[in-house]
Image (tube, rainbow, N blue to C red; front, side, top):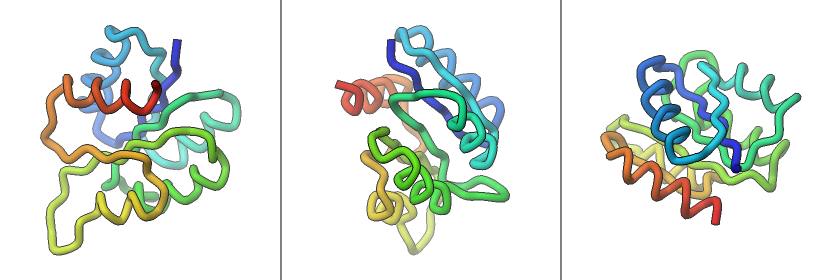
Amino acid sequence: MATILLIDDEDSVRRLYQIALERAGYRVLTAESGKHGLRLLEHQEVDLILVDIFMPEMDGLELIPLLRKTRPANKIIAISGGSGQVNQLDIAKKLGADDTLKKPFSLQELLHAVFSQLK
């Protein structure tokens, strides 16, 4: 069973994704911030990391290069619903994300992206 670390500052989003991923057979660890996610990784082995881009303290664009440096073998999927002139998801890919998901997306799209990265 693959283990996924889900890092997102929105509690309702974390719970929704966690339930969907667990029902699909994955073990899910959650963190409400980049710093909490990094602390969890000190003691946990994971196969995939889901990272929200827009979070307080340390956003996903700061976190992804740290994850790439400390966990080079882990797959990373960046998630963002933000819009603007700069595409944050393109930047996330350049910083090391393996895949991206633009909110809103369906739970089926989430599961497909996770499955694709873990196969």
